Image (cartoon, rainbow, N blue to C red; front, top):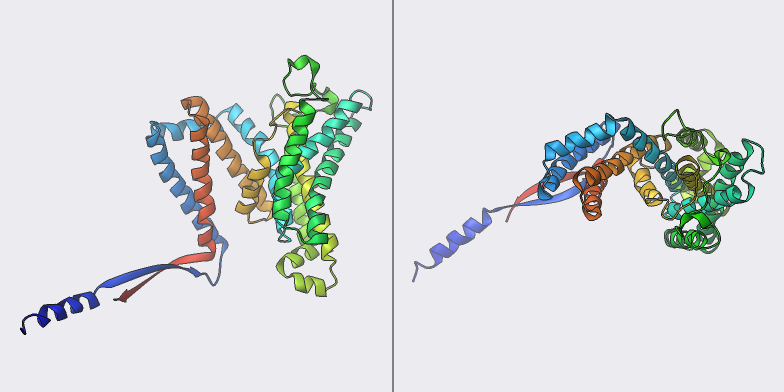
Amino acid sequence: MQLFPAPQRAGNLLKANSISVQIFLEKRVNTSSRGRVLVLASALLLVLLISWFFFLAVGIEPLAAYKIIGEEIFLTKYGWQDLLVKMTPLMFTGLAVALAAQMRLWNIGAEGQFHMGTFAMTWVALHYDGQLPDGMLIVIMFIMAMIGGGLWGSIPGCLKARFGVNEIITSLLLNYVAAAWIDHLLFGAWRDPGSNNFPITKEFSEAAQLPAFGNTSIHAGLILAVIFVVIVAWILWKTQLGFKIRLTGDNPDAARYAGVNIRTLTILVFAASGAIAGLAGFSEVAGIHYRLQQNISIGYGYTGIIVAWLARNHPLGIVLSAFFMSIVFVSAEVLQIEYGLPISMVYLYQGIILFTVLGSDIFTEYRLRFTRFLL
């Protein structure tokens, strides 16, 4: 009878000596630019690794795919053109989202503001093309695009300032309203009679087109986008208005105590954000298509949210993040053209890249900690 307790005590002893590991995230005390660069570089390496398995899964030789993507994007004239052409509206929409985010306002409506910018400028082109002096038409279209996007952006700003309505919901839902309004016009009064019933307007004259750089598709909208990046950065860090915006975003109570009219500033920032997003539509219509057409945006407004996030809402960082996102867009097109991948696989490829890069951002603020203890 005394032989049975011994194995039981031995079992308890073995259980007591087992080791368990707990993994959790720990807030970093200090974050540095070097650490952010290392995290981003690690994320890009992880993207290459995951995309390697993606290519194998769809029957593509990974090294050959990387070679084709690199050559088509960086070593061909068309690749560079397409890269900079897609980068232009992404800079505008990313900057629009980043400006609002400096005040902790979440503008999810850049897509709708993009469309309303195209609406306002197209109205001018259709009614006054050929009736204004050279140079004046494109300037008025530029101004109207800002007004159209700005007024559309001010709607969620007013609702937020006056009634406290969540700007994420209102700005998001207004995207669908704007897209439906453009479709209504393209299938109705603005449809070109000579288009065989395609939902497009008539082509604008040369006076309503942005100048291009030589015999390329790269247009002056790229320069405008860079100028606006510099202007917004200057306003945010060199002016009293920018200080108020950043102060309100960091500490609304302190801003209110300092006499900042947060309601008025909310409307102003949302209107400015919408105006910049409207310029994305202006650059796309006047610089590339020379007419308004259905689905003119390939998600530039929504992608602008990712651009702003990657740049950590810093205007100067928008240039690099927009360049990265344009690489993602063009590489997906290359895969679709060269290998005939279905669009669903292309979206999956884009999602892998974005999920990996965005998900890695958490490690700039937190670190993994491993704790071992005995059970």
